[in-house]
Image (cartoon, rainbow, N blue to C red; front, side, top):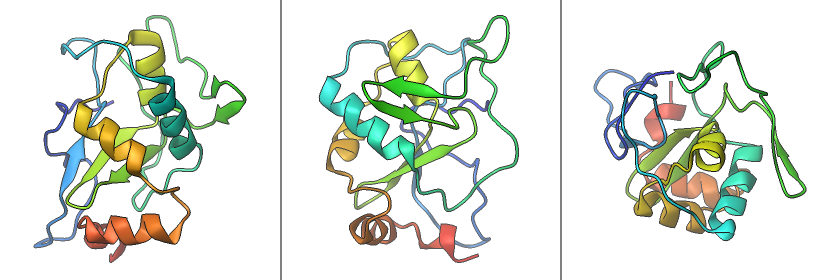
Length: 154
């Protein structure tokens, strides 16, 4: 997987030449780079799981992410939390708009939080908590208001 520092720009996704789209990286971890650890609330984690179950992906890639955290092979591509299941852990990305920018994280962030105690930045946690469901018109409006039009216009 590609490494991007938290809250830094991310150029992993194609944006048309001359267009601007405020994408901000969260959770693009690699073992050789330090990351913040700590606990997160069940409420936040449950909301993140809900968003990751069916992420809106205006841009997709072929293949899947690999993780430097895996020592002996690929872990399951499925993730369970309470009665919820998320599939596609290592090939999907989640776009979380906040009105001024769009946070982008791999869906594998669920595994990083649960298994490695990764603690995402506070502003990402706030954005997740206020993010509408990804299939709602409110989400689409917020995505566009956050500068996401170039991702869906090409």
